[in-house]
Image (tube, rainbow, N blue to C red; front, side, top):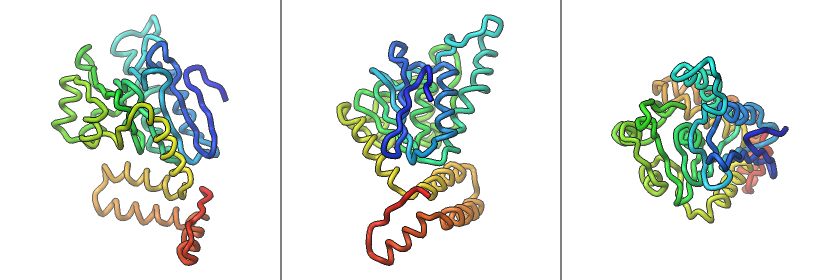
Amino acid sequence: MSYEHILVETADDVTTITLNRPDRLNACPPDMAMEIRDVLVSPGDARAILITGSGRAFCSGADLAANASSSVTGGRRAYDSLSRSYNPLMAEFTRCPVPIITAVNGPAAGIGCSIALASDFAIAGTSAYFLQAFVNIGLVPDGGASWMLPRLVGKARASEMMLLGEKIPAEKAADWGLIYKCVADDDLLAEAQALAQRLARGPTVALGVMRQNIAKALDMSYSDALANEAKGQWTAGDSADAVEGAMAFLQKRKAEFQGK
């Protein structure tokens, strides 16, 4: 399927989504958000998803003007766009059944920052940075940032990002634990692709349960998390990959998972 704002390619069990508005630093209009969501909802045969940006940016933020209505303006338009497009996209990151990697090249601002950090593994090039600039235009962070950032880096650092609107360079983001890894710009895509391939060769059912358990556990009590893990173990234990994993262990060989 072809899209207007993104490129989608699947090879070797990995689907790569490239945000493709380089002339706008890949600013994300509501339609782009829904195109990304469409891929996450139905990943097909993909066993991992990689998201990156074309040109010199990952995503410079929302682009509400691209879909602006002459009869709906200001705060109401932003509310409607979040409710109908951006929030459904962000919610889908948790529900997606396969691991998601983001390769962050250049700025990841606003909703672009949220997209980058909503992945299981965010890898950034040294020239990349993360920015919540809403305070500079009298708005508030969205796309799940106010939930996500305190959990990733704590209240003080989240306040620095949101209330002061300061850029967080990739190396600093890695030091904070905001992202998985910072690598040289020239190595970014290769590093991200290698990780995507590693995950795509893993036990897909179990990986999907793991990523959902992590997300759910952030809002669960310890006892509820234990019960949720037991349910997840039931799901994973009934998979063909679990059978293969057990046989490989007994036969002292490396498991060959098929994603089933």
